[in-house]
Length: 103
Image (tube, rainbow, N blue to C red):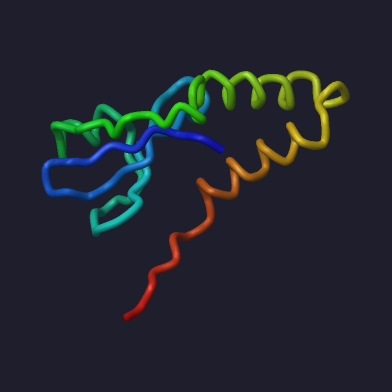
């Protein structure tokens, strides 16, 4: 799974994810309520956002996962096990609670 990372003015890091026809920000570190926001709400509440550079290995990240999700959703019979696994990993990353490390 690939996604863009952005930092807000307080230094919190957010994963920018394509969900359906919208972009969402999911809090990766720091504290904010709510921890998942529509991108326009995220910018209004915590912006401006500074996008982290994309690693070369992640080129086409949004487009690649969006294409895979569309394939699995629209024609699951033709999707490979690897593509279904990518979509499942993406969905789990969205709904799985973030684990905190304790010092």
